[in-house]
Amino acid sequence: MARYQLGFHSYFASEALKGALPKDRNSPQIAPFGLYAEQVNNSAFTAPRMQNFKAWQYRIRPSVLHSPKYTLVNHTLLRNQYHQDDVLTPPEQMRWSALSFPQGKTDLLHGLVTMMYNETAAVHLYAINQSMDNRYFYSADGDWLYVLQQGRLRFKTEYGVIEAKPHEVVVIPRGVRYCVELIDEHARGYICESNVSAFYLPERGPIGANGLAEERHFLAPIASFEDKTEDALLYCQYQGRLWQGEISHSPLDVVAWHGNLYPYKYDLDLFCPVNTVLKDHADPSIFTVLTAPSLNPGTANVDFVIFPPRWIVGEDTFRPPYYHRNIMSECMGLLTGIYDAKGEGFQPGGMSMHNSMSAHGPDYDTFTHASQAKLNPVRYKNTMAFMFESRLPWQLTKFALMSDLRQHNYLNCWSSLKAQFTKEVIE
Image 1 (cartoon, rainbow, N blue to C red):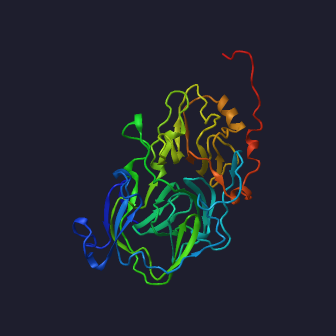
Image 2: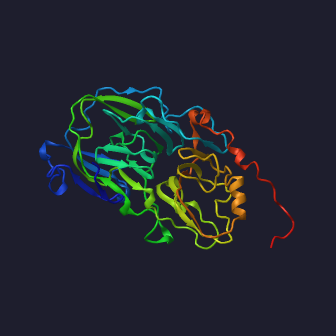
Image 3: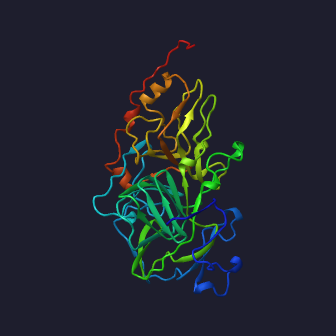
């Protein structure tokens, strides 16, 4: 059963067995109950305090116990900046249909496919119909942000259990070991891998102390553990490739832990949007849930932005997103319903890509309707779109470029737009 504690990047302590945490939470010569003390660091030792992430674990067995040799797993579609495909990404707009559910039994490790990546991040899709039985995984390359689109999942981690449903996101930090179990018959969703920096809450600036995503709505797991001694497989993402090793026990044997490095989840339906209340059109940055910042102020390696249910009340304003070209590159997905800038073709589970300076905006039908509509207050219901936005262009994988999922007629959604220029003054 999943149990949680509240907070975001807070310093937590948790024990599944009373007394398993050392007294005063120090590093004793002998840990309670014969446990092994192990520290996990996800940042440089001398990183600033607010960017320094670590956790002390008190384990039944230390993590050094595994087979003497890892073997490379071939025939996988996992990619990132370390493992790239030799294909070129054209500068055009692109869109894909949803990933189909597999016919044969497929767990997360075999149901992953990478769609795009750059020097700081990668975007994967998953479609699965089987739990990871006696198989465990960790990424040595980056933090993984899961965005659930269909089907509930159970993440059994070193730190405890997280159960998540569609419209929730789960962040598994770099190096954390876990397995993914199905709660429903099958599941599908998106993953954003951040290779350079951790995810943070964006600064609110003039918005003030409240709004957007609140720290109190993030949930971290309560300690629980497995004490199993049976043959299992441990998979590792290392330099963009998938490796496999053998272990003789469950790696989820942390009886107690304390620190500010742990997995967590967040319910997107709790997001508090801030938007235009009179006129004009605000930028999508007001919908940022999490950000992985870059060293260049004002830009991010990747922003996670959502477009949730909300009221639209702008007067004398073109309400959908206007036509635009950005320095940032966008990868967009849809969890539920429809997106207000597109009519047909953008499906839940599907995605689109608009790279740096690639023009995009409403299709013809959306533009025509929005230009003629009476501007009464409108509430967008039953919708949840999102965007992984990066300061660097997205490089496509061979799968994404050649896949049958790619909608080669995507550009047709703008083909009916005609010049409406007139020299007459419109009152």
